[in-house]
Image (cartoon, rainbow, N blue to C red; front, top):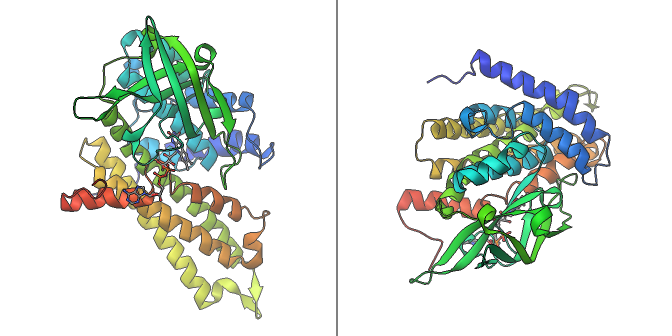
Length: 385
Ligand SMILES: Cc1cc2nc3c(=O)[nH]c(=O)nc-3n(C[C@H](O)[C@H](O)[C@H](O)COP(=O)(O)OP(=O)(O)OC[C@H]3O[C@@H](n4cnc5c(N)ncnc54)[C@H](O)[C@@H]3O)c2cc1C
């Protein structure tokens, strides 16, 4: 067992940090921190991601992807500013799902523009009335001649407002046992003309979270549906990697908070001495460092297990739940080390805290993740009656 990154992985990490510092951060800083980044700027970022192989890291090279190991993708992902990481994840997981769940004609037509970052994708599963229970979707799809008709609403959709395409989870009716039959429909915006409404949240304010409305939305059947894949399984497989990645996003944020707190503890004086020399501030720094280290290791372990093709349902659920909780605490402690300064917008910790709070919900709330771990440990499903 080797806990060190290889030389190639260190180079990958360094190059991701450079891209963030020299290309992404200047774009984010040039815009209002409270408002979504304009779509042309987001397209510039996506095109750069396309050049770096980050719009399709999970696809093999022969399908136009970069065939990255999930561990290596995680190292890059950890360096991303939170809003950008969310946008990238939503887009690339949509690419992955389209590749896995569409006909060859469909994915060969749609993916080149998405992989090049010329069109932005999103996945719409959650609805106003159902989120954690992904089998409960009510958005309906029906076939009329050569068209698919979609009716319903999707909520909290990352990239929703700037999306050119949405992979919509629909109900195609119920089977003989009364189970909801899920079907994914690819809706291109210029064809299906779905509407979006921005949703303002506590964090990720430069992002594009939206509600999407599909009202008698009609798209050609040939381009929109395929019976190729078990949708519930596809969602689970992609969620597994997403969970470890979102855990690493929390790690990256907590690391930035820790670095800020450590630097401040080395210059701020109280009672005639540096606060970094006081026992309770040192305890906070020690707790933060331990939270970050433990969170990073469990997320890395989960991604390495995914690369080996192992069953990881419990491990990724633990990784995201542990890392997001521990790192939210760590950011809060970094704020504490700064006193009132930690609450000011100037230092950036309050923004990190607000963004980190957003991580406790997507791709499985921390309560749902606890139930997944519980199910894996006991063999008993506590979700349903
Ligand atoms: C930053 C962010 C990005 C997102 N991006 C997307 C996206 O791109 N696409 C998309 O489709 N969705 C997206 N979502 C939505 C997200 O997936 C859902 O919000 C999430 O699945 C929870 O669903 P819900 O909000 O409806 O909560 P609910 O399912 O209504 O849950 C409400 C509360 O009840 C708890 N709960 C529910 N069932 C149980 C149970 N059986 N036992 C114990 N507790 C339970 C939950 O843990 C939660 O605390 C995003 C959300 C966020 C915050």
